[in-house]
Length: 228
Image (cartoon, rainbow, N blue to C red; front, side):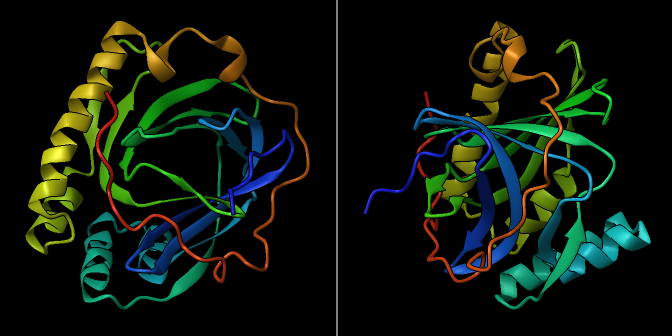
């Protein structure tokens, strides 16, 4: 059965999955979908599911405790907790075959805050959205695309120590980093000028996780080849 192409206004769920288990689930509103590139948005107040260890660390403001979530991941045991998306509007672009997704964060009034490259397994479509898996490392870029910094390198290193990120994935991640930086420098891919895709969309109802958010069969259990 072919996974669906979504219409503007539909809800699409991005899930992190590994070894057949859901690690997180977040509903988005679809802005556009051509079968290869999926553009989504989320607003403050959106209810999601995330690992309970991560939500506890976030509520306590304890970034160091987030490393314990990777211990749970390595052990294959975790619980999910409700988490409410806060403070920002995010516009997200997922491109088929790409080893990362790109996100632009805005205030609820539309003021640009930063860009964010989330390194992850290339997405695979499901009946309710897309499955991938976050590989911990992130690239944070200024609103004008002129400067960048790496984020969560400690989490990535811990995931490597525990074998959550194996050597083959680490090599693919090196290529993914190079690809993201090349696209940023050349202003290609998601960084090509496209104001219509990256401006604040009209406000509408918040997307809601479907009752099948956890029961829909998972699709992305392997990190595919880096695009390009």
